[in-house]
Image: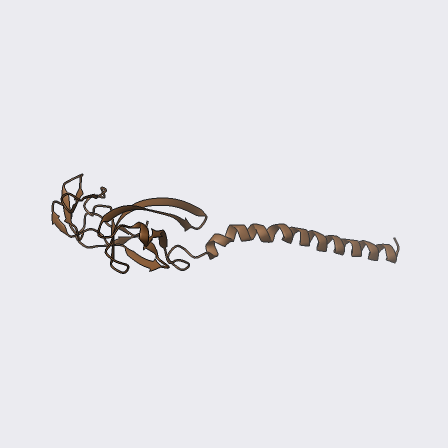
Length: 176
């Protein structure tokens, strides 16, 4: 074989290797991006909206009345996205005087109901009773209703959902 044929073969091997490497990278880089992107994203509460969820305009909340509002959000942990829905009790007594409580009883996690005729919250499971300010007054719950963090942004109420340990007298936040 001549010297020119050997050089031509080496040149074609080199060009083929470069083209195959580029094709491999064109496939591998996006695939790695898809697989690793969730690891680079911030978890809920570490940025963005800070874990707050928009529950609606303040004008939709009646003044001086407790209203049960549904909080809907998506929690993302790595590749897994989970939709969750919780109910919260909200009372607006003005533009800046707002109270937000979890509707979960701190005794055993049953839903707490507002009885406007008795002006108190009642847990139907074991008879826990809370006054209009959410303070424990009767029954087995070990503490008062759990308040939730909130913000008012551009006339809308934003609430951060938080789970709390049930059955204990201290308010202990729990990550789910």
